[in-house]
Length: 494
Ligand code: FUL
Image (tube, rainbow, N blue to C red):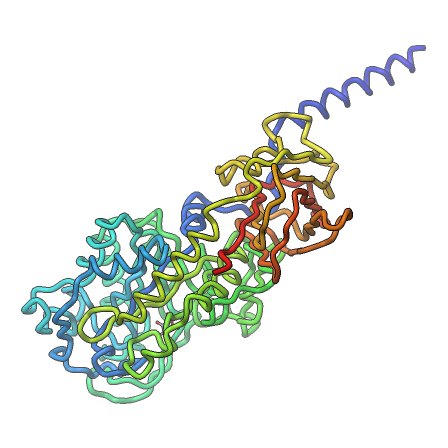
């Protein structure tokens, strides 16, 4: 009898604990994002702008010897550029304040090779400031790229360049141009250049020359909200190509691998083949950014005016970048006049309209939802959270339930060809695989599936589905799920 009482007490205690657990949020799984990474993720799309003396030389990589007098855009107007960016639906801009040619587009104390030596605004110009103010006026976020490689500086490859030029340049840029949402570090490093007239080839050891640890600490001290982008993060990693394509499976977690065992990886020094995919259960949360130019090159070239990516191409890129949990960073390049070419403006606008029209109506918005499991039967974790507009309210399951299903009963037969899923990434990237079925001809038919859900996953179907019943199956997850969004959209058919 005594034994029975003990057993019963144990059982009640277990039930009580289970009940308590079910009232609590699921424990986070693996590495999770910081607040600055969440803010960055929510941007989804921004642009990066290249416009330096290199534009006036019709080159992609300035050698570092261009006479500053050639930098003379006569019709530069930041507001007009921001209007085009906004029309495209982009939420921010990263400005290339200095490219590999070493020409600083702000009146810096660190090098005479800067905008004050050009005729622009009679030598009183500051393009970083004009772009920063333009961003502010249009309500867009502002970020900065300052190239580590400098083909102009006589001391490039010596410690003096890093300590007396490059680091101080970053300090100036991060102190005088307001709050930055991102800072961009390029991996192109060393090679031939002007180098103060030496005209020679200079090599550096990318794994330690720039002292990136020190650079990260400068960023954190001066711009705590800026997400640091480089080949290896620490906040955002390069996706490994300049085509705008993340891996079909793309993990936001990542552990960089050095190309030379025993030497630490760094921007410009990393094994590139895993960048599109990331690392399942990687050491840190380092999602991908897909940088891709709107034209074939990052700089303007008149002979590429007919090669501006079409709105349809941009849309296809959107699905394989933003739709795979990355952010899209699209390169824009003004002409020597300082204006964007009409083809660029036009294609950005049509692309922006296409996106707006596609995502205007979620046909699942008023659906009634039945889930196979709800964490502790607690309203807080109800599947209704999937169809509200909050990115972090979520449907969760009991700890032991890793393969739940849910059925959406739509109000009427509706048409869709895009499925959107989002996890509440505050609790990590949990789900590995899902499948979506539609009720067609009186039976379930699988219409789409995906791997690595994360902050945003879009499944673009090759046909329109017309149905009033849709089923979601979580087919692989190591832990209980925490899904925040399940939405259905139809791209405009004309
Ligand atoms: C590259 C650079 O070498 C290109 O010129 C451009 O700035 C692009 C965004 O990054 O690696």
